[in-house]
Image 1: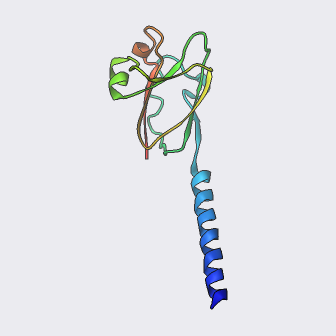
Image 2 (image 1 turned 90 degrees about the vertical axis):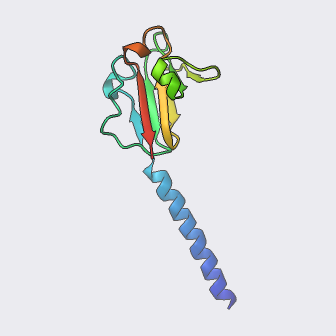
Length: 123
């Protein structure tokens, strides 16, 4: 009887390891704006793409010219960074998507208004 319980425990552990590995293997990395990078008129870039929670967006840009700010829907719609918004400034920002809506803008004057913003829904 003990042998049967041990086999069940091993099978459960293997199943858990498989499920964890499967979930990690599904995460994808996307470069925002593709070869053009994080720049003006990139708002349409997410169209036709299917994003999942855990996927990573890479924002490539010149840090002296742009930034990436994670905002809420209101911040996206009004092109304003709410107080306490996370500002990324590396020029090679890697941001993991959460389930649901994810909004990003450049907060440099006039940039968001020129289409330097994206809205991504992750399932």
